Length: 118
Image 1: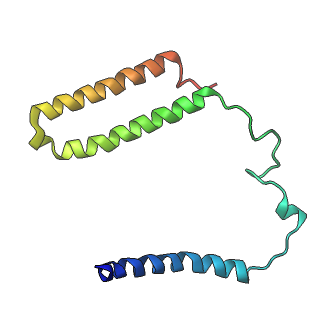
Image 2: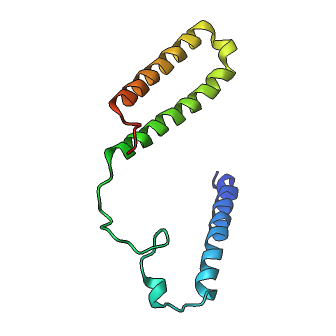
Image 3: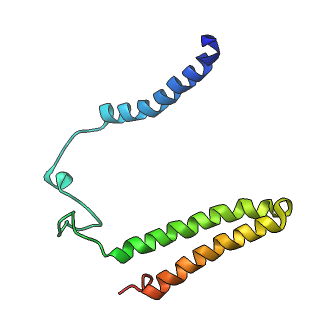
């Protein structure tokens, strides 16, 4: 029974080798010449000017959550659209309820001003 898992073990070892070999080659063959400019923090083309633990506006997170919600809605709509002939009226009603709940949440966010950016 152990020999039936041998191809899987060979595949895992080969995959790890393919992943580790370029990293090791780059570490060994790359020139190591650290300078002051290379060691300074760099972000977006200019020096960091504030604390990295600064607080973000909560609306940023609300927009991110809305994006995730509607991205997942699309992920649920594709399989539903494919099997709509087979699931019939019950499936159509279930998806209508699902979209209705998302629509109510979207309208609530819109009314509260979460989508307004200053």
